[in-house]
Image (cartoon, rainbow, N blue to C red; front, side, top):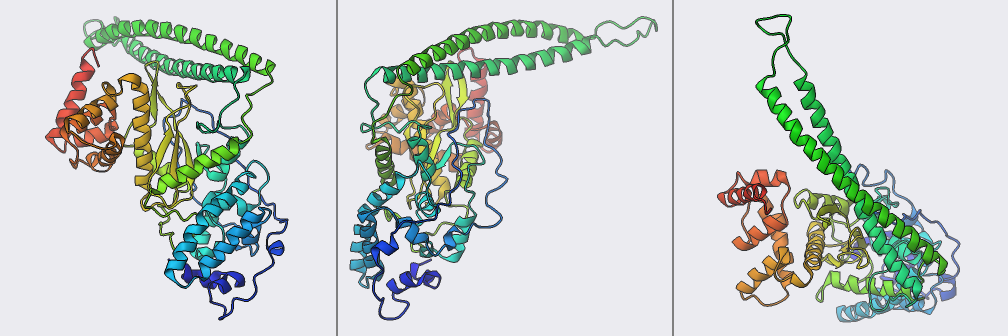
Length: 546
């Protein structure tokens, strides 16, 4: 939909700027009147940062994607005024360039003004971002969240769509809009992104905070193992009870009605199985005792370090520019989602917005895409800690750009490798949302595997096997880009039985990025290639070195 298709919905000022209210646009409004103090302080509830729950095995069902009725923020005639109010001279500059952009008749001039608008807009948005930690008028909030500077830049249908988007994080998943992300960082609910610009001061607080994060990671890991062993014990005990109950069932002998029959072959087999299960129960109990000791040790460390940190003056303080630096990081990430040749225009307009309802990167749609990926790639969001596979969904930042590339910029917190979340970014207005999320998950997959292999990343595991194939093919360029391309083929083609990958790559992915059991069962009947890979799984399971 083009911008000029929406002019019937615009206020008189903007309609005049676009030349639809007569030949003369009339005098510009006074800046002080346009950007004076705003009385609109409508706000929405902010979600809290999510703690990692290692017991979860999947994403919640999406029972509510949209509100029944749209809110009325986008029908507020003062929305644009409120969005730019109290932001100083930079807001005036944004307004001025926007006017020139809208009134330009020559496409070349329009292109120049469009380019000139980008940098001042991001500088203006920084001022808005600094207010994310406190009360914020709804227009500023939705400006950060969706890039909506003026509602009439999009048509009525699109406004109603965004008006129905669920505002609060009712799903309790670590998927954040930009305003929520900045609020979490600014209020210390979330650690700032790791950059050279954001450094904690070199003092005892910093040391104790880092040690405390590591101890918390060990505590979470030990707790996860205890829960897993407890579930194993419950399953073993259930089977023992079932088998013993069947052993105690005896019918009358055919020869003597008043004497109960001997043990059947099935009952004898159950007794042998119970003996094995009792050994498993003892082994399980030993593992639980070891994990309990680890848990108690980590718990003591947490209390000691928390007390020392408190004695040093509480949580480590971050440089004053932490929020600004986080915004700077986000700004660079926004550019990367678009790529060098992409559309970097920073606000939502009907001229560039072409996404269908299911392709917009709102929270619910992204969670659905992540669940779809996990239904194919069984361990997409898993990391190994002490030989235990933990499902840890990364933090996901939804950023309002027209990019097509999602990516990971932190596989996990370097101070807590056990249970910390990674960080990925997803553009909200891509051509294909599933592919945008897939590229982010592929990047996460690569970085986690590479960090896990450490110095041996070119020799071992997923990255090692892929690197050796890459070298054997004498390929040039960024190996990670090749991996991401192949991962997309793996998930979109190979998962459907369409062979698109090299044989060695397919074997590596099958081993180190396994499909779910349902997908494997389907594929083994499709082709001898997948049947052979399936048989390899069985052989590895039967071998001691699996």
